[in-house]
Image 1 (cartoon, protein in one colour):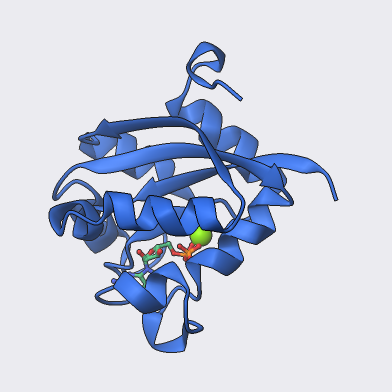
Image 2: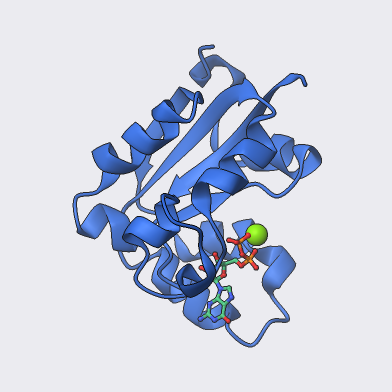
Length: 140
Ligand code: GDP
Ligand code: MG
């Protein structure tokens, strides 16, 4: 296994309920280090650009509306096998299918308002981290 970085977003449903610290605790307990973090209000253009891969999906418009409905916390996470590790810690997209102990099982409200984003591959992780952070903002 190699040390990797992945992009995490704590979504508006979670920041609204003041869950940033609880989610960060789950991340850190899983052995991942938060090596960059900032709270931002995404613009519509930023949210559309971030989720461009989903632009043909029926829920794209709702997803973008949701992502700009409140602040988000964007994070770069570092650790052994970070991409897959964080996907495991997040749990399934639909919280009804998420394993016990995962962030989505504990905190998600719905398949859309599911509390966190995590990159799905190492290649996408690099693209997504660069979408939000300058190299100088990441301190490992
Ligand atoms: P993820 O990688 O587990 O986050 O899931 P996807 O990449 O498939 O989807 C991106 C995000 O779109 C999800 O995290 C949800 O916030 C949202 N989403 C996924 N499926 C649906 C759906 O069927 N309906 C709605 N409204 N949102 C969805
Ligand atoms: Mg995804």
